Image (cartoon, rainbow, N blue to C red; front, side, top):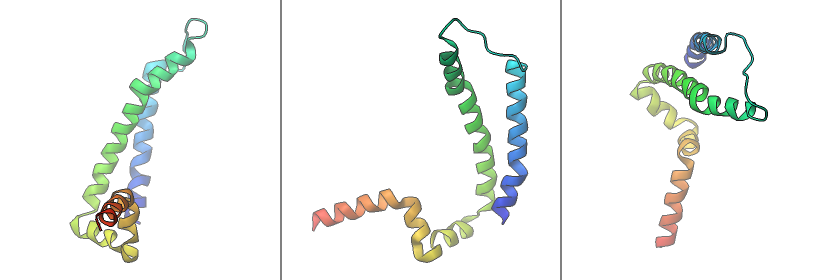
Length: 105
């Protein structure tokens, strides 16, 4: 439940910062562009400005989550459900290792 509380506490702050940045950038006005260019301009702004900002904001929330999950908690979670959680998280890496081991034998 601590994780849920963490996200419930921080996501509204992320939303506020993103809304403020959008408001500052666009001031509630439409984007004007040459005929046929508006979608390209919006896509470019999404890729170069908005998505990186959202990722940076979520990275800050992730840092709080990592602080919440100390080493003991990370270990506890990694062995939860008979190791299925760790397998799901590391699945592709573990499956590739198993394939290499099987190929060697």
